[in-house]
Image (cartoon, rainbow, N blue to C red; front, side, top):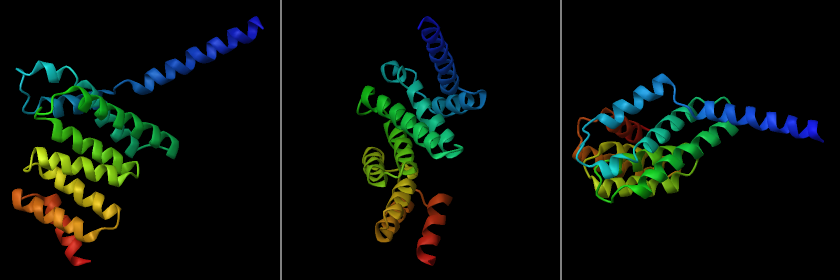
Length: 180
């Protein structure tokens, strides 16, 4: 019995070490986070910024999900990504200027998790908060395509092009939607 507890203890210890290692940031992930978070940062708003390291979790676990080796790992990474965004959205103020960006990132993770209806709600909220954030229109169009609503996808692209006519992402989607 003592030996079994010892073995179980070792197993637990090593599993925790592996999980901690999997959660740790790589140098590339850290550089991505720093670049995204520091763009246009308003350092006078420390009450919101203190929570933004959770946004990094959202970004890096979404990226990990895209390159996951198997479906279980992909699902786990997407769950971590959504949790990171949920944390931020639950702790920053409603008028925090990065809220639309976090909503779009969560929408992307939800889309990858095959939950496009939830993603649509996030993209619409991001657009309501910042109508000129063209990435929300791109995500909205993709999510509508995922649920098979071509008309709504086209409308999202057209709305986005009104605020960002130079967006190559929106232009490509417009060409695809009108051409096929």
